[in-house]
Image 1 (tube, rainbow, N blue to C red):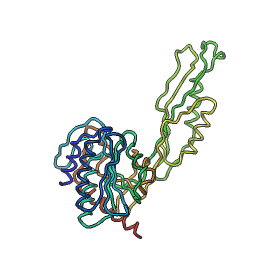
Image 2: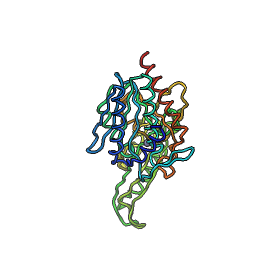
Image 3: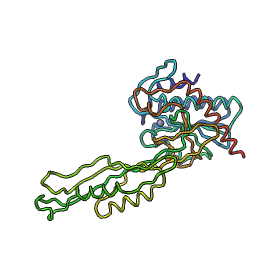
Image 4: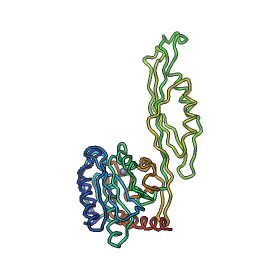
Length: 339
Ligand SMILES: [Zn+2]
């Protein structure tokens, strides 16, 4: 099957997060057949009932794993193609990537090369459940090439994020007698003003860390001293967040409660000779793998700007190029490992 045909076949098997079973079974049958022909091994790894990662390996030890996710965001829409693009849900995020990775593996197998694997995981678009599960059963892989749409450029890094709920509580009173109450809103705005003055780090590659106060609510009426107020803040991380966390905690201390909602670390990734580079803002499964599948790289065909839209598509030319780039990277990393 040609890479375009394989990409369209995968797009047409709907796999919105939680419903990856159909596409997983299709890929398992495909890779099991490829494993049988080239002395490899394919398996399904259960994440939850009816949700499986798909893994296949050719040769031992496993040096490089090509990996991406099986799930897409909603809504589903079927594939179509014109001269330049393949369209459809998952075209660039990530059915086209899966097709390019498989075609790269087929070409290397036909050339007698070994020492690589494919790992397709569920749940990236929601909780990274598949990647967390995979991190618990590593196979000794030294490098993992994670596929997300980067326009076929190797991502050297991505910003992380840190989200907090800031909650202040006080005591209601008639606003004519504020000394009888304790305004949660006044405390919260003081805390937020102090937070905005915290100097945030700047990274040479990723740029500045930034803070956004995204929501603000509280109070009951103009003539009531507010007993409750809250805000949601989000910080884009560019490096080690411990200093920022300490400063935020100090700003809140004694005046508001700081509840951490989620933290995704900033990523710094390495390059490979001869492959163009970029910096991306989106997050991936890479932190969830926790280094258990080897040193991570991030590259894939297509543009993140059309992922998650109704215009989702991937340039056919980039699918073809990705088949070559994935081979080139696997070969270089295998060489690096044998030195
Ligand atoms: Zn993705």
